[in-house]
Image (cartoon, rainbow, N blue to C red):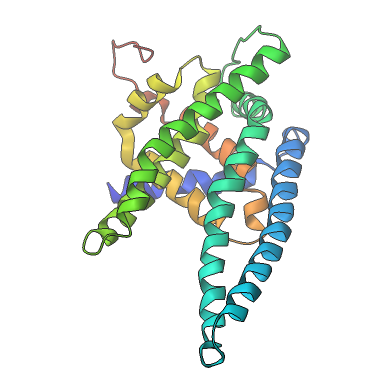
Length: 250
């Protein structure tokens, strides 16, 4: 199981090599620009907001509690990381979803995979991609919010935090694998059923994406790299997901 998870993490790193391939570069530009713009804009907005809130709280504290301002900055930094990870990453994926689907298809063709064969107009592709992205985040939030509330309860908060991390890794794995699987004609419900057969592999991939998102500057490239890594994972491991004689779309 651990070896399988490590192999899944390796696919996330493989994606960074793929995004710089000459045949993929032009399909990476838009997702990359979206990611950088949102992270930079969000960073400036949140730093300014945290500074104002910190000054207001410090002014409210008595002089002998001025030392708490340092603690407040630590708390605000954690809030910043959380908002960036789950807020701006979600927004970047929502905006970049149509482009990520195209990137996944081009990456699959580069790696020798079959074309998607979709004949839908561009506007239909955009609508489908946005609907799928909203569906994914709805699936995540319904499960994440109760776990987040449980983290404040003494005794079970640690276990709830670990469960939330695992759920986040699983969701990141599902989210990025949705692009190559969606191009293959699988709905999100079908994808969950199929990917659950190799849960450790998907968790390893999602956990690696989560860690890479925490690394400054590297996180700018995470979205297109994760799309390429997910495409490589699906093409390389597809046979192990499918039970012989069983239609994977059932």
